[in-house]
Length: 260
Image 1 (cartoon, rainbow, N blue to C red):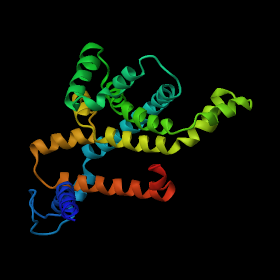
Image 2 (cartoon, rainbow, N blue to C red; image 1 turned 90 degrees about the horizontal axis):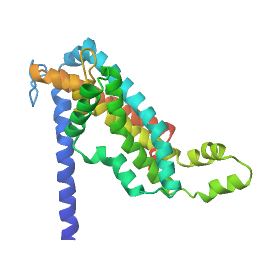
Image 3 (cartoon, helix red, strand yellow; image 1 turned 90 degrees about the vertical axis):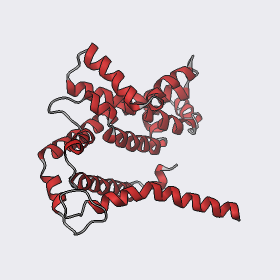
Image 4 (cartoon, rainbow, N blue to C red; image 1 turned 60 degrees about the vertical axis):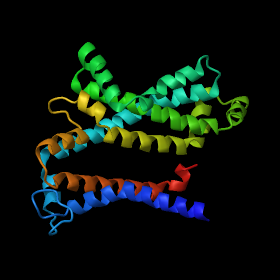
């Protein structure tokens, strides 16, 4: 019993450590002072108005959504066939290939960002937007391969072979048999990759350019020169957007389905 009580106390402390900063940020967003203060002296919604009215924040937000969505869709187009091939066939050097594709999740983000900067910008002289998109694509691809690959490892490929024996060609069997059975893994990988791309800072900081800056990079630059609660207000708006997305996913697909 003492062991379980100790585990409970430890779990509570971990949750407090994770959620207290979010609570503090949410509270400071409603402060009426020109600087971030906790506890707040008065309540004001002015900072939310300033955040929404800011052209730079709006432009950065739309760019982040666009880059995250395109990078994730490209990663799905590339990652699903790779995950299928690695799970379905005995590929020579499979472990080495998996390690190569998963390396961006192991290497520190700042190293990945600098390496992509040196390769895409300095050596290949990519334009800013394509370079930023390619960088995000390379960062989120491992999440697609890993999550979809996990779903494929639980899939019974004999069902696909039965479809072949009944006259279904391989392409049709893949789209009508395999993909529907791993749809929960595809949706989960899409959400995970999209969130990681949207919140990515190292790659965005290195590959951004004049007029093309993602929201996290814009917030970092804003904090360097300003200390008002506008950033807290933007953070609260992003929290609300995340909660709304998860609510829609729960109502349309069901969290239980994504967990399978």
